[in-house]
Amino acid sequence: MLIGIDLGGTNVRAAVVTRKGEVVEKAQRPTDAEGGPTKVVDNIVAVVKEAMERAGVGNGAIIAGAVGAPGPMNWQTGVVYSPPNLPGWKDVPLAEMVTSRLGFTVYVDNDANAACYGEFWSGAARDVDSCVMLTLGTGVGGGIVVEGRLLRGIDGTAAEIGHMCVARGGRLCNCGAHGCLEQYASVSGLVRTAADGIKDGRQTVLTERAGGDLENLTGKMISDAAQEGDAFAQWVIEETGRWLGVGIGSLINLLNPEMVILYGGMTAAGDMLFTPVRDMALAQAFEVPGKRAQIVTASLGDDAGVIGAAGCALQRAER
Amino acid sequence: MLIGIDLGGTNVRAAVVTRKGEVVEKAQRPTDAEGGPTKVVDNIVAVVKEAMERAGVGNGAIIAGAVGAPGPMNWQTGVVYSPPNLPGWKDVPLAEMVTSRLGFTVYVDNDANAACYGEFWSGAARDVDSCVMLTLGTGVGGGIVVEGRLLRGIDGTAAEIGHMCVARGGRLCNCGAHGCLEQYASVSGLVRTAADGIKDGRQTVLTERAGGDLENLTGKMISDAAQEGDAFAQWVIEETGRWLGVGIGSLINLLNPEMVILYGGMTAAGDMLFTPVRDMALAQAFEVPGKRAQIVTASLGDDAGVIGAAGCALQRAER
Image 1 (cartoon, rainbow over the protein chains, first blue to last red):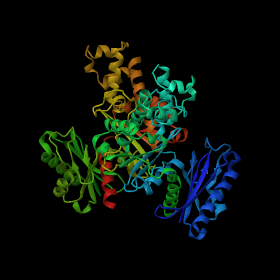
Image 2 (cartoon, each protein chain N blue to C red):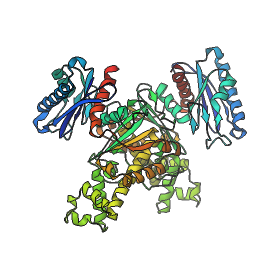
Image 3 (cartoon, each protein chain N blue to C red):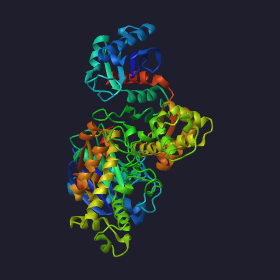
Image 4 (cartoon, rainbow over the protein chains, first blue to last red):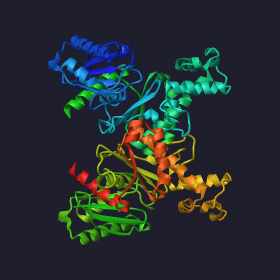
């Protein structure tokens, strides 16, 4: 058995997972991020023990575990530097702390990489050998699997798909660069595209719903308006899809993957998002790799993180 | 011993290479591309035999060979489809033809991938484990090495670095897409940036040198004018460097490589090109991977192709 842990800013989840990537039991509790590293480690330990009790397994049955944690980090030493959504963390030796408390080896990996590996191991990409995953949230995260292995890079910072430049000199990104994919294809990018259009005088129900302050606009407002038939809101979602397609076209030309997986609430928009994504990706990519790459929705939902962390643990324990 | 073959549209080169990536002897002759596949294979066989005679080695000493050939191709079957600069070629079983004529196994690999592998194996990147190479010519080609292995992709079409989109809706590329890096960072892109500036009324000696027809502009004219102190020509080279830096910044965020290698006549511009390349790459990339990636000139010159092909042959024979 393996232990997969998904450490988010709000909740921490743990699961007991088989060597084949099936979840036996799982548990969840609040992260209590404001309690600092010691409190968070307490919660990690508690949630793992809870999942293990439910599954009826003791330490003897565990090969290893891994935490998918927000970066930046050193995945080899298991030290987490200072993630924006874990306040007060500074160079925390997370792998060491959790390992000594649990009594079996626990590795640390980047959360987006772990989720990608989960989809690769037992989700949407389980029948292929290479894939790219884009997680569409406040930002755009990602993971890359090549020939069955996570592409982590020499410092473990690879697969920052949200920070490919798709428009030189374009929108300023939180990272300090300009024109990053994240500024167009994340939920924040979606909202910004809507706000820009409204400022330019486009007619939409969103103007009223924002109550005179475009700061109030949310992704949910836009998707609701689009579902109700608001033409501008639909255009915003399609335009976001075209930006995503531009980035995906580049990824296809660079990596020639078998599959591109999209994850996040935004994918609920369905064809309204996926049709422009696929059209633009095909227009930007070469024909052979463009036709090869299936562009699909993630299939594991919130379990991708725990399953993927367990898969990373297995791969690292076996190496 | 290994045999490395570099099949270009103009010349075909062959070398006898040691298992450590050192060239023992080499030979070169015209490709005679217009003679069609049979004539080209005759020339490949002749040039290999010439190199082997010079080195004083017979077939018994050869582990394997490989041809670095222009794509598109299937590197696994060794069939070359229809490369733009090998007229009359259509689904040519190159590996099979050369193998049967030479009497030892000869593989086929993409030429840009082979050159990248050459620099990785025994050139600029010989002391690192991962690198990205950009070949700056009429287009922008490339190769990617991750954890010591070429990243070829499922169809062998990966590493088309020239066809990352750096400007959505930008210049139309020969591939049919818009805003490809190649349209800004190749020699053709350099010339186009100069022509656009001249049309916009920028003052430069290039206007006169083109003799009233901007179609006459060449990369050499621009670099000569820049060396002579023409401010506009210098700006054109710097601007080309900034475009390159945008693409390299994205590659660094995606792949977190130890080294980025630039190859091609354009690199003779030295700091005039490299300073804006490095400045822009650092501005676009995250700090840790940005500082990590050394951006350097290729070190093997024209030998990268034959050495890299030999290295690919060794790796494939040993697998």
